[in-house]
Amino acid sequence: MNEDFEIVTVIDDDGNEHSFEELDRIETDTAKYVALLPVYDEAEEILDDDGELIILKVCEEDGETYLEPIEDDNEFNEIGKIFEE
Image (cartoon, rainbow, N blue to C red):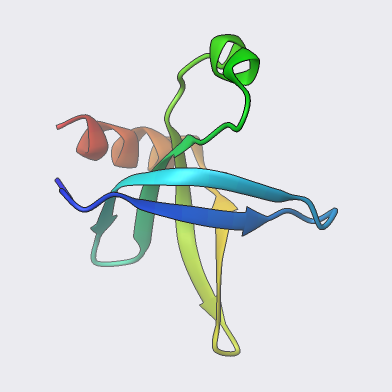
């Protein structure tokens, strides 16, 4: 597991910024993935969070790096198991 945690800022499709703590990253033969936890500014937001780990695929296109949800259930389950280990 990666011991140097990073804060990653992601801009969604609506232009809103969201901050996450990058817990780990893995690379398979076919893709790269990151495991993230949301970072909140307000204590109330922390209490409302369900604590669920967010796993996203790292994609690159035209020199830009972006994160996208894993649409395939089998792929998501396989990557989720790897992160759990």
